[in-house]
Length: 230
Image 1: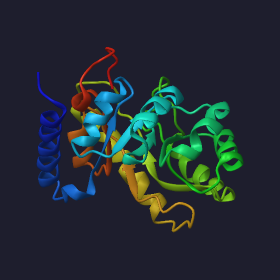
Image 2: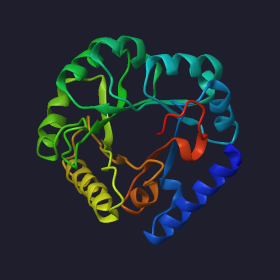
Image 3: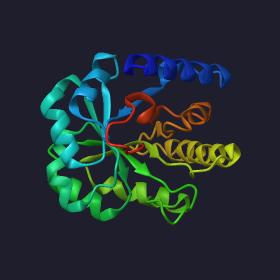
Image 4: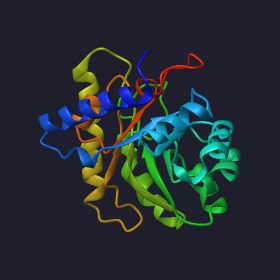
């Protein structure tokens, strides 16, 4: 069985190859290791292998990993965040990848002591099973966020459909990149919107080719402990 370091080396090579195909610099791509399905020891192994960006989707997992790793990592909350959980999470993370509604923005404004770097989640594919604002709603939603000085929109996030059809996946990621470019061109002070959080274990290569700057990779790096895939 391969080690975290070996798997990570393979992923970094795949990212380098994808960047070469897209005429990009691999240094533009940040790997967020999604450690939600493994314990603190495996998360520590990830950090020791050189990845300092860790992603969690539950407050309990964040508690457990931060107790073991603390400031050695930068912390990303990648799951849907319930408004009632904001006070338990928001002061302890570096990035939120799932801002998708006004009620959540209001709670962040109420609870945060400093501006929070947020990705607005966009449901590019239009699937009913996925959260996020629609592409048509994104600009108005992001403009509205200007009323909240504790929110800084650093970019957009999406998830592609779970399909083997590469063109469907590519079209989803391309759509987010084009939307990012439109939002960024507005020059909104609270929303530089330069980043793209897209791509997971099964499709990060396509995401990188289409412009991803943050890829959220779970099992391809950390393997399995609890059987949960990410």
